[in-house]
Amino acid sequence: MFIMAATIVGLTNITFGGSAETVAVFTSFSQTSDSDKTIVVDEDGDHVAVAFHGKKSVASMSGFLKSTTPTIGASITLANATASLGGVTGIFFVDSVAINRAPNDFQQVTIGASNHGF
Image 1 (cartoon, rainbow, N blue to C red):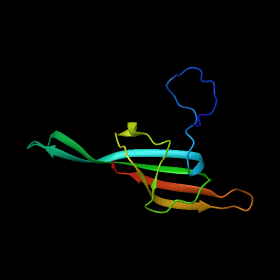
Image 2 (cartoon, helix red, strand yellow):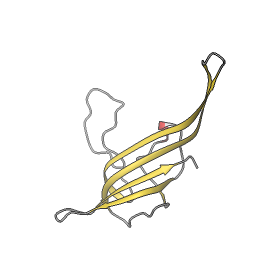
Image 3 (tube, one colour):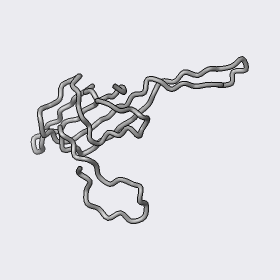
Image 4 (cartoon, one colour):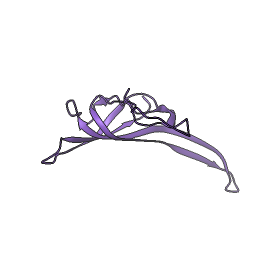
């Protein structure tokens, strides 16, 4: 695990840094989880029930590539992904890959991946 050494004063339930990833030395990581919902409305137009279904999680990671570039549709393990954002667990699949190069910098990669709960 790659949690940077830090002394935290004050709040005790915050996270500093992140876990090391397999495919890249990450410089940023984000994850969003959501679902579809169906609402039942009564005769007066009041909401009387709601069902949340089709949970999914989308992640984006940027960093310096340290292995082969993942291909679209490939499964990928994301060490920084969490199921606590909506209960989505399982494998992430690569949706997009972008490579960035500059004359005086290392090649960087941005990977978009999604998890549909299986």
